[in-house]
Length: 403
Image 1: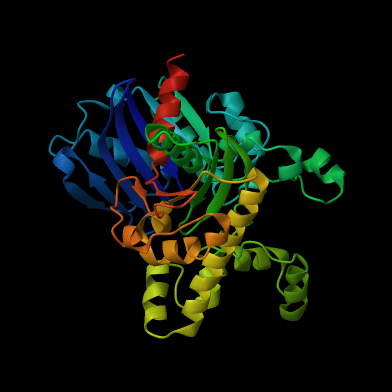
Image 2: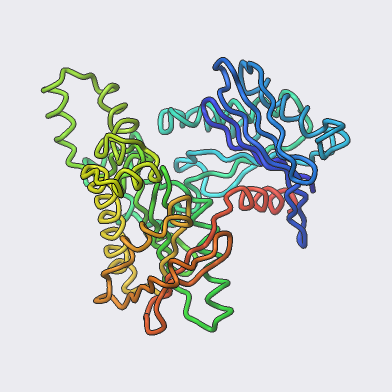
């Protein structure tokens, strides 16, 4: 089955083309479309033999972006398909399933309309997700579209974990509760951790997964089901991130608004786009830039890194308590997979919890492979596992359409 996996942002589109079945999961091509609806749009496309092609030119919207992707995939020089009709299905990353979707679904007109009703829960991402699905349906009406929801893996949480201690009527009327995000990543790496631990003859029932990047979230997973996760009604809750504040006293919002005269929308823009490590460091939202600044003596950059690590460590500790112990802690995402320094900041100094961190293994950790970075006497496995959200979407699409 040829599956085109699509992850649409407000002005971007990431894609991967899979040749997928029970025994095969080959990536035929991948790429990104940037600056959709903005002058000087750019497509970066990897085609035959991994050759990278850059295509420039203004792209007005997601329908035009998708048509450009089709053209690249079928190009006689660097494409990988004879015809776009070779595509069997589209798999879409969709941010928010609310309480309507706890598993992947075929995106019928009815299901698209349900998603439109949930736009208010994810106003930054949902319109683009839906626009991409509708573009696929318009361009290839007979090809099925599958929605894979960021929130679905977290739907196993119980009410004690997902409810907020506010008047119950807000849940009943408006479904205000914790939903959690990065579900495809947490699903993938927790599953890979189980496979790895089984191969070593280890226990595997309690796993804490840490998806650490510009957006970060932590999940407590027991027997393959999420017990709790750090993000909430929106991706703003949880640890501090690239530009998001994470957890804070809600009264801070009113206090700052009274001082500055900002509206609620302006304040939310500050919390979502101007806070986190960017707001603390004043340098960047990119952890690599902040690390360089900290190494050069920038105290605010060092503070931003320390705050991020401390909050991740606190969530890990609380989830060890929630799970009544832990068998493995998994780090993934751009920071979890690549930052030797941040792994050490987060996992070091937890000896009292049976976590023995091995700095040498951490430094020698190979990119792109599962690596152990715990000491030999550690009661807890510390694993670095590369995430593959696109593979999860392709797998979910294949399994749903093969039933």
